[in-house]
Image (cartoon, rainbow, N blue to C red; front, side):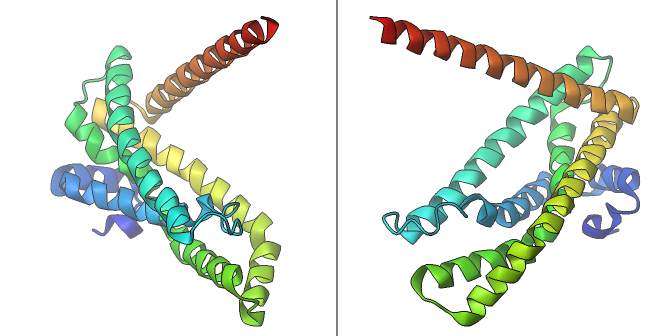
Length: 208
C-alpha cells in the first residue's frame, strides 16, 4: 500500500497501515514534503521587496515554516493525546506522532503549482520575462479555483485527522473531530484573552 495514493480512497486502512508498518521517519518525511509544498505560498507578499535579499526570504519561508511545523507536530500530538484521553481514549503519544502528519498528505499535491509559482515570481523579481509574466497571469486567473482546491484539501485533511485520532484512541471519528474542535476552541479563547490583555496594556501605557 502506498499511503500517498491510498489516503484518497481508503483513509482508515491507510492510517492502520502507517501505524503497523511505517516508522516516524515516514511521518517526518510527509511533514517535510508538506512544508515544501506550502512554503512558496508563504512569501508571495515579500518576493518583490527588493530591500530583502532573496536568500533571506527563502530562509524565512522554508526554514522558518519547517521549524514551526516541527514544533506544531510535537505539540499537537501531545495535546491530541491528552484531550483524547480526557474523552475516554486509550491512545499513546508515539502513535499520535505517527498519524498527525497524515492530515497533511493531501497538501503535498499542490507542490508542483507552488514551486512553479515560486520560480515564476523569482524570475519576475529580477527580469521582465514575457513567458514568466504570461504564466503568472494564468496563475492569477486560476487563483480562485486554486483557493477552493486548497480549502477542499484542508477539509479533507481534517477528515483524515478525525479518523486518525479516533483510530489511535479507539473511538469514533466524530470523537476525533471533537478532539480537534476542543483544541481549536482552546486556542481561540487563549488568543482572544491574550489580545484583550495586550489591548488594555497598550491602552494603559498610552494613557500615562
